[in-house]
Image 1 (tube, helix red, strand yellow):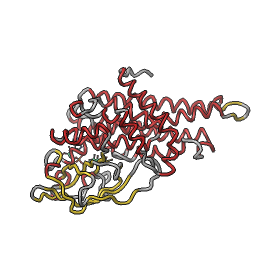
Image 2 (cartoon, helix red, strand yellow):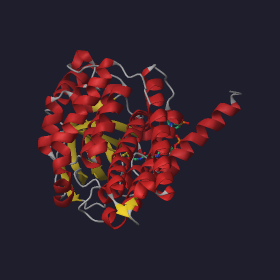
Image 3 (tube, helix red, strand yellow):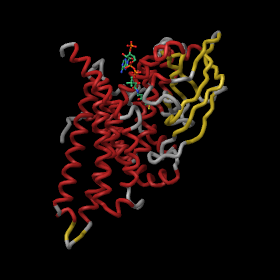
Image 4 (cartoon, protein in one colour):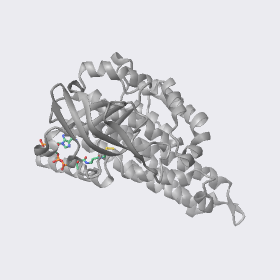
Length: 385
Ligand code: COS
């Protein structure tokens, strides 16, 4: 389908595709096997200016929109979801600064993020707060000119490799979610360390670890927005980033479909290529249809965000929900079409299937997306829309 992407968007797609084909695909099995963070790929992505896409021009970015980022994420995900996660998590971690940061914070941090010199991580989840994001326990106590952070963040993408962390912590425990605030914490700050590195089912090219804050003192200017705004900062951040998770779903599904199609055209059984069997044809038709529907929704939502729409929770959640459920179904079916070969590590689809599972879980489970969508629908209905 032609989505009428601009010349620039087509160029972004071509650049990301070239990186994917020349640099990522030849190494993705190694990253997966060794659970290795792809530092050199991040450098290539930086040199190609892909980190500049989501940074405004006045801070040395390219000032591009959600659709431009979507196109880049999709292409990287088509090759390796682990690499794409490491890239997209930088945008996720940057949204709090982009959306609510002060001019001083933007000047201080965004140029280095744009150049790829400093990677970013977003830290909301804790051992006791996953879907219930308001249930965080990490505290930030104001003492003179400093906030003192204490607590543990869990399952943080880019932990350790990132230099800048946007962290949600409670400044007023008695107020629950309304007592949360957002902060910028730099790697190397005393009292800030990293816990165990997780061993994951998939996206093994991305790093996931704990963040540990023990009397970690940061300047009080590192608060993002005002005290009490942390939950809203987190929710708005996720509203903006979830469409990108949808793009990851479209990308990995497309990659798996292409592998299954290539295999099916060559594989012969009962004296003919398996593409001549209706059982396989119907699976391929369903996969392609679902991918196209997911892409159409993800691109539409990205365009809606780029139009300046303010309330994007429902649409972004729909894109994430639909496209990531498609990714799971399509990657499972790709393994099925390839049969025994699909199950073997020699082919990439078993990795794609393991990788895809996280998309239904992170940045809000797909059950949470349904809650977000339903709440918005009920609100709209009560307003008579
Ligand atoms: N934009 C603006 N405001 C929002 C918002 C959004 N997207 N979502 C919630 N709010 C506001 C609500 O309007 C409410 O404001 P008031 O206190 O003024 O009424 C406040 O935030 C609390 O909202 P709510 O009562 O809906 O919060 P809940 O604790 O019930 O939880 C969910 C809301 C479940 C949607 C939230 O906790 C969530 O998104 N969880 C998943 C977290 C997640 O994605 N984790 C992944 C980790 S990051 S990789």
